[in-house]
Image (tube, rainbow, N blue to C red; front, side, top):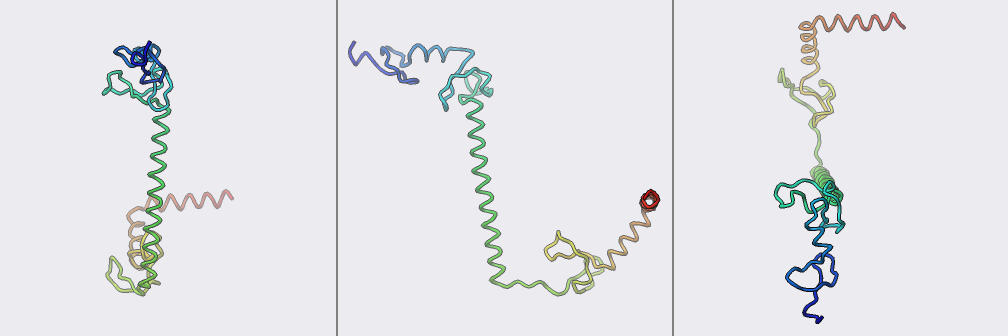
Length: 171
């Protein structure tokens, strides 16, 4: 046989007799096998249970096995997560540098959100959720609001009182 009559299988690279098909018999068996399939990424022949379903392909399964697909997805996720963390750290550092530059000072007074009175920071309760670290309402308005709530919910106060009394008696 001359070199013109010989070729290589496009899947496995084995030398074959070149006719019209460029695949060897074992690769053709895999292609037409209805129970097994070759993964295009790891090049291993696996049963169809090792592939996710895909209605857009003629076989009805993805060309990449579950293991390769999961590995790829994990790598992509880890890479994206690392980029997000990096950009957040970078943003925080830029903000801190900017604040150091302008030497931002906290104001000494704050306006109550309810009574609109200007008071020093000592007139407000601590609140870690706000930028200033102080609550929106002054201490007087907070006490008034709490008192009103207790008047509107007398059962809650009675239950709390009884629970505390039971705790002190049992100790």
